[in-house]
Image (cartoon, rainbow, N blue to C red):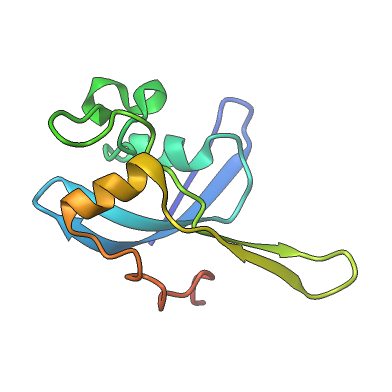
Length: 124
């Protein structure tokens, strides 16, 4: 699925996303791929469709602030990055979940290995 919108300066932003897992009726783990590179793009897009990132008080307001066992810190994690290398090829790096996000995944029953088989690039 794709989200796109212009901002105050008329610049467009596009994000592709897919659902990896769902917990209950209100929480989902999404894989998001920013097509463009606008500041806070993922946070803005999710808040714009009424599904702010957990802990994102700046764009999601009080709706993004969890209660109970989930941390109120921002739950946004760059799981993997692919960056074109100036000498050719692609530099790839992966980062495991740590800290408050890892704690939340455990509490929600998410398996960090889920989603590894999803493509990072959207299909045409």
